Length: 280
Length: 282
Image (tube, each protein chain N blue to C red):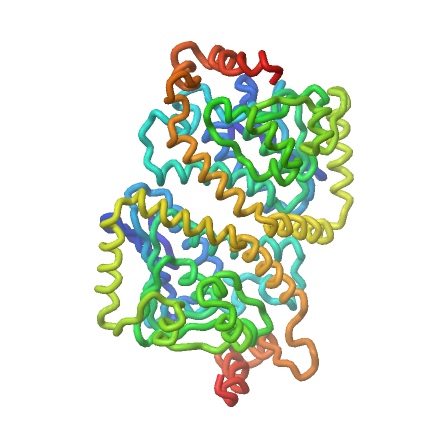
């Protein structure tokens, strides 16, 4: 494994996203390794607490949009992928998140720096999330003309707040994220390690079968409230988002073209500039 | 890819998984399911595969999960082993995931059925888009007679609540003509015609553009999930866990499948289990 680090002590399993130079942006390899790390953690019945974290300065900045060869080709609407392939890619992506949301042990997110797009989905899918007060949460997909992973947003956050964040692509800090319920608690950066460790140890004290029943009850309950169908409808919309060729209407910002001409950083700056002027 | 417990073939655009324990009427045990999962995954990912056929070698499609209790079956299935909650949930989720994965399979699926198609065998065909049966096929789920709970959700989606309740709560089996009439299978044909029927259907499906098929199937599946299919799987999994924990047969005078099996053997246990129902016409 190179994109994921898997560590285990007597009480805790730690799974770290490990592409720190890319702010742990998710690519195909990372997703695959993450899936198998989760499988390994599920099969290990000596430990009940699993911490999900990111190496380096960020938790996860989102899907790797740096260019070809790093992300799934289906992301680029200019390539002529067929519908079946697109749907499969989107479904695979959603599956990683909902596998984490349905995970049969207690999951704790340890968030610092950027926690955007799929990174935010991962943090929301964990049972408990602790973050640095200065961490940055949000999903700017809409600014690129793409659709986000919706269901956890509207299950965790009020509809008003979820719509505001998703439809404008606004980014908020850890304190605001705690206030609206995306995370459990925001703490100063130097207390984050201790907060996460204490929670992991607390979880490890609970009787395994009792914890399992509580987790299963909760997760089945949220599935029954249509979380499961939500994943599918949001995967469909992501596939359609790509087919609908964002940016091809005249005057609209075309993220992928600008990225290929001027580079990723410049494209993100150009994308965000008009929003910033309006205070978003 | 070669497997011990299934035969996996790819011919042209068609992949075929044949359950291959004919001496045991293709009863499912853990090694067979591991093979099945691997082949299903491969057929889903292989871009050259456009369609999947699932069938059984020998005289039966699949008689259900292997109830012999030998070392290749899941020990958690027997409540007398006092399994841990976590293990039970994990196994049930895996079992339900397999059926869900098949229902969500990205390409059209056809089940070809002859002889017994019971319990988990029925779960497989319920999850396939099409089920073509030979006239000698027999369908049902006798789980309740062993004190266990079945994989419910697809039953009530496919055949309706009243029919599903009758089958689940009595554990009776039915023939292929009835299975066609109530919509459990797509079509019943004489045994000699089943290969041609399946081949013809496969060709028909591959005549439509694959993207159009995919869109139609996704819309169908999404609608079922919006009607609660996924949550249904989880609830059914929970009930299966509870039915193991509730120690079926431990009340006095109730039939105890596992004890009888261990004393008299699998065949005798089935006979003893079914005899009182048969007297009542079920």
